[in-house]
Length: 219
Image (cartoon, rainbow, N blue to C red; front, side):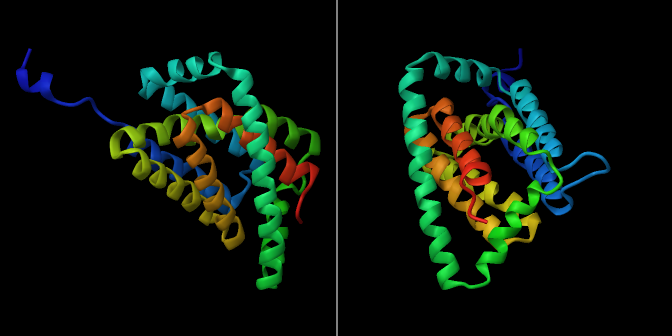
């Protein structure tokens, strides 16, 4: 075997996966629908494709998730619940402050809830609870942030993943949604950076989604 080939570091597909995420998600937020496929089905399909590609690109990906779920699952779920409640409180304060400081913010916040228009509430709840919330964390934190932390260093990898998470929402043209995505990416990214637990962050994300969009909406 060629010695130079042995010394060559393994190929890192994480940058290409970040580009793939942008290619998939930016049109989603611009158009929201393709024929009979609405925002929720489209988003679910995008996440599924990225998770499958991630598993194909990284042999440790599935093993790391399985090991995380098997270790102290009860404690991680509890902290996920508590962090979701705390993060909802952050957004409750942010909702009040933004409407007070920027009168037009209310329109932007209300527009976020237009994503539910025309979709069955039960379908939205089921997709959020069973796939979209956990699935986003499977890709954005358990795959992309983990890989970028290994490649760029902990803090830089976390910030890079959070920045891309915010940027893909820019296709919506809604500054309030982009701001919410930026804050969310920083919050869940920091949780993952500190705990290295997909399970904890997935519980937090899923419960927060359900609270903000379904149970206790701001718009």
